[in-house]
Length: 303
Image (tube, rainbow, N blue to C red):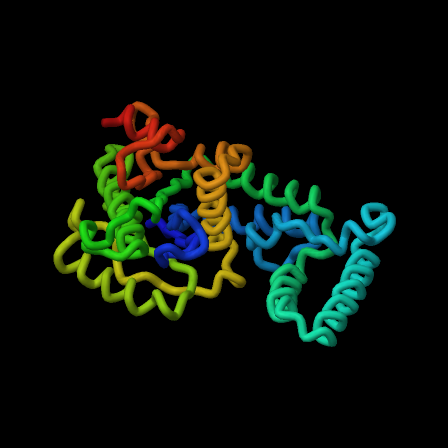
């Protein structure tokens, strides 16, 4: 039995505020999830993040107020929290008095990053690298992802929306992996899988209905013989493995949009591979055909 934790990066709307939409699924053996979860908790403990969500995009943002606090990096965590909280309170008071349009957005930014203010930028980056390296060391974990370039996506030709195509692709690749794994002589019983998706009220019903159709008619690529049930939707704040799917999706998007390779090269190791070790679990849909990225080059080689 395998659990496939799913999360996204970017927006599915066209044009939206990102050029790419990424849906990533992280497949973990059911008998390993507790051990792997404990490993992530140990890393969180080192950075005083127990009980807090790993939201990679918010962790890796610069926090301007930290740079204005003298000797910030020499302070202990408790003092850092106090100083940053004070600086942020002063800034919010200033914006509220001036009735600035920035007040609402700044308040949101502060709320989203509140858990991480005791860590410097370099510490936050090191935390994400530690988590990514730990994930990459799990040899029995598989990454499935659909990376859609929305600039070249035609929903009329695709007959699907961006998020629907991404979901169908991830489900299909996970299902094919389960089918192939079940045929392995070392696998004594049929291997089943269950999808666990970050809870999104606008997506939950649509994806549940879509999954019911897949069970009845199959996807464009395969019948569902090993993937059971409709997705379970969970709060990512409470589930570390969904947070890791978020990390993977973020790294893939930053690579495709900004050519940031450091984190991408770490997590890409877990992409599902064929017998020739070519990564077939991650696809970059570019609309106009393959581009020169690492993902597309892997698929060219597997054609």
